[in-house]
Amino acid sequence: MPTTSTKKEKILIIEGNTTLGEKMSSALKAEGYIVFLVKDGTEGLKTIYDTLPQLVIIDLVLPGMDGYDILEKKNFDVMLSKIPVFLLSTEGSAINMRKVPENSVADFIISVNPDPADLTARVNKYFGRGGESEKSDSKKSSARSTTSKKILWVEDDKLIGSILARKFISAGFELTHMNNGEEAMGWLRENKPDLILLDLMLPGMDGFEILQKARMDNRLRDVPAMILSNLSRPSDFEKAKMLGAAKFMVKAASSLDQIVEEVRKLAV
Picture 1 (cartoon, rainbow, N blue to C red):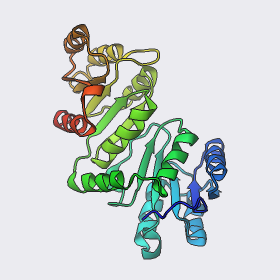
Picture 2 (picture 1 turned 90 degrees about the vertical axis):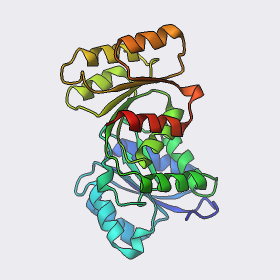
Picture 3 (picture 1 turned 90 degrees about the horizontal axis):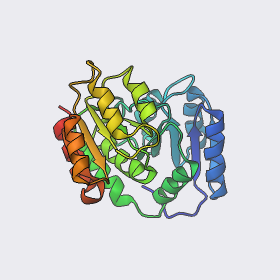
């Protein structure tokens, strides 16, 4: 349970990317937190024992021991299992919820370029600035869900990206989040999701073009696609339908729970 914020909480960051780790560390230190930075998974687990921090921020991909292994070993120890974790996926890889112990993660951050300011805001919120109901809802949703469907989500809006990503992950989906069409098509050349979720207004290649390219690929042709956009002109609905979108939802007119439920229906 988070305590009231005195800004003196100890935070351990386990991050193999030196530049990213130092940026996150600096941002949190500027807020008054006591920060430890470790770049190796094996050393990171040892440092959890040595420092007993109030929060651990763990990247999935690490030298020595990956994030899943750290979670498993940490959760096996009664003393360490109560320490909250923020789990990072910084290489565009989906988080495999089957490898994440139930209720072991307080927050998920999925981005190839995590924003230290966003991380700081989440940490501040966790330590006494509200958000308790969000974490409670997340745990309940995770407990209800048994799905492990793979979702590719292409969305460049950081705010909705952050909020909705947590909803998808807590609902049990394996989520890969890309910020633009070029990244998405590169990922699709090597992977096949159970659903493609697209914004329409994207930098470079727009959602329509991504959808069209996916429909031209025999391997991806049968993958359902859903549009989640603030465009709401009849012509946009019609074009999406012609390109094979199974569902079109307008962001401003849809709740997070409605979006997750529609994704659940399509990703079968």
